[in-house]
Length: 458
Image 1 (cartoon, rainbow, N blue to C red):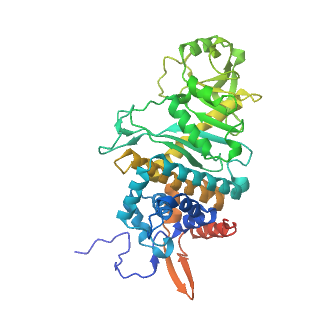
Image 2 (image 1 turned 90 degrees about the horizontal axis):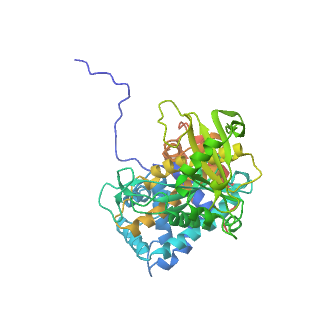
Image 3 (image 1 turned 45 degrees about the horizontal axis):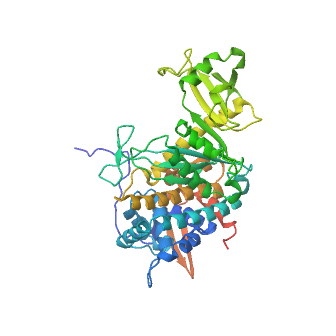
């Protein structure tokens, strides 16, 4: 009998490859760390936790973990990817050393977390300055989206509990800076909560918003130029009052639950008061209208709050709710922005859906599960995840162009980071040669050239 003919060539595999670097494209992340000064900032922040005569810098250990997570790792042991390539990533601590450092940082409570967050905020301001017109504050405004994430636990972990979706795990509340239609987004808050934490707990939203504002440059920590967006979970009296508090003066666009009072007011809105909703390109949104509610429905809410409702034909197969009216799906949100058409305000609020893309990216970057047992340890892990997501947002913002800026983590890993290379040492220089036939090698080299043009920190 003849052997079956395969569609793929047969190759022999040997283990004696030399000077071959796997994940060679991840030098993009390493160069981003160097150019924005993140390594210096984290090392300086964690210097108090460096033991006398210690070989490994705690800041370098934390950054190594963040790089491993950015490259697709989801546990502490995945730092072994970097340890196998010392010519690219330098000396990497052993697994026991990494575990001991996480325990040490966790034992310090909020102290270590505050220092890491302060370092991230310092570097973030520098990154936005380097990005120029590509920065999320290029138009003088910043938008922060708050949203909850369900993280399923497959084993017994501290504070894991049944969730509202009948799963078991944790319910972190996260915040992201929206980069707009031409970019992705970067994390600015991650509040670890038990799985049974309420979706509309005002105290948690206030805490998450406070963490997010602390990550912004000082000029954006108060004032109308900063917009806070949430879904209906943030539509509570306490949270809206906190946003509108005198001296804070933040802009907000907060989803609201359709109560019976709101429903009754919607039924009284005359047909002439409804305005067609619009799409992002300025075209009219088919089958959708918006109107503003006034009167006693605003009683008890902060002064200057506007209540805008949208009615829209439901999608085929969608079930109507008791709060819907006349066969139309009703949604509602509150804002304190004035002097703008309500159709534009409704579009701005609807674009909050981009936060779901940020959550999907976070799940693919270390947030699929929390790998450690104790809550204090997992809080440190959340900071590491945020550093990884920062790098995955900063590198495209500083180095990539066109559609490549919109690539999510999985596509960045598949097309850029997994590129193989050969390390050549000549004289006192080390040169990393990337595979010429790799379809996206030109993207990698062009991005490295872009990063090389940036000034060095300090």
